[in-house]
Amino acid sequence: MKLLLKIAFRNMLRNLRRSLMTGSAVAAGALALLLFGGFAAYIFAGLETNNVQRIGHLTVFRADYFLLGAGNPAAYGIDRHQEVMQLIERDPVVGPMINVITPTQSLVGIAGNFSGGVEASKTFLGTGLIPSNRERMRQWDEFRASAGYVPDKRMSDEDPSRGVIGVGLARVLGLCAPLGLHGCPALPAARPSGRSAPAARQELTDLAARDLAPDTQASDRTPQIDLLAATAGGAPNVVQLSVGGAEPQGVKELDDNFIAMPLGLAQQLVYGRGEHKATGIVLQLHRSEDLPAARARLTGLFRQHHLDLEVRDFGELSPFYGQVVKMFSSIFLFIALVMGVIVLFAVINTMTMNVMERTNEVGTIRALGVRRVGIRAQFTVEGVLIGAIGATVGAALALAIAALVNQAGLTWVPPGNATAVPLRLDVAGRALLVVSAWLGLAIVTTLAALLPANRAARLPVVDALRHV
Image: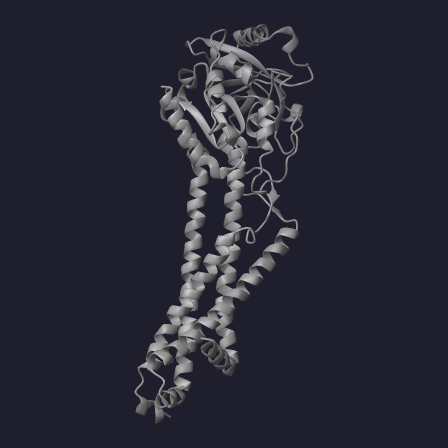
């Protein structure tokens, strides 16, 4: 084998320019595959990080809420959700996997701003959460794909009446100036709407104010909006929300409807003085690789205790994540096929030329007693050697370029994000990607070299010796 490699290497050097061109094609294929693969891997990690920071790895719902509960979240509340959380936390299998476990409350209703001469209202999609748990979830960054944790003081456990709304909703409600938002047009002047309208608005505001304890009412300097929703019993209920700030959501439909508020305020709006339930129980794990095991254990745990609950992961709650993964995986497969075809024909062309130029040499070797299998092995090893060297050079270049890009401090706004994050190429951290690309190109070059090698091995000795 050592002698065979030595002969193949010398033959490769005999046609150095041709070998360099073929090796360059293989290197370009490896470079393209690894750079795009590293970019796609970083996109996947960034999307997963963004989703896990917002909605966790797993969410526990009451059965059928995922399919039927969006229109009436109050009807699918989890009874005694604190006991369910304790059951999950104390489980010896799931408990050690959990980073954060927190209840949430989903709700729908109408948000209105009738202060400072503004008359604006808009339907909203609200989420009630525990602010401290939200901050802990935002610190999760297993893949180092986020822009870094920045504390958000706009919501806190100490102020149960303050929340955050989407920038689009702030624009619709005329809160751009009070919140100091830039590039946000002011609402046109309100038209007179009849004598009864001011009284109705005052009655709505007074009702919301009466529902708040005196020590929980917000400062006059903070803009406030009124939230109207139906309780679990079907009666209308109103609370007042102090708007601590606005944040973009990345998707206009969500940005125009989003409200995040403390859990207690959301439960007060939905359940009034009745039993406060939770729509979901969010679990954020320490490691994403534990997700299948945690989900299977939770399903068995609920079945064991006869609880009418189901578990959904972030991929089901955010279909956009799966769509992006499938799209970039398809693009990567297409690029791999194109590069494979280019490398295949480049190696076939080079090895065919080598066979034609060395036909007399093949006849001489055969006349000296070398069998067909030896001729076939000689040309095959030569093609494999060109491919292996080219793939190795391409992998080295990809690692170097990825390192330069990662150190350049570039930023971009990925799909589903509203803020810029660092632009990175995750090549060095994907050993499987590097090995797979290298082996794939090596296999393609082997197959490409077999065709001319078989042709050389089947040449009749006499015809090869008199070939001109």
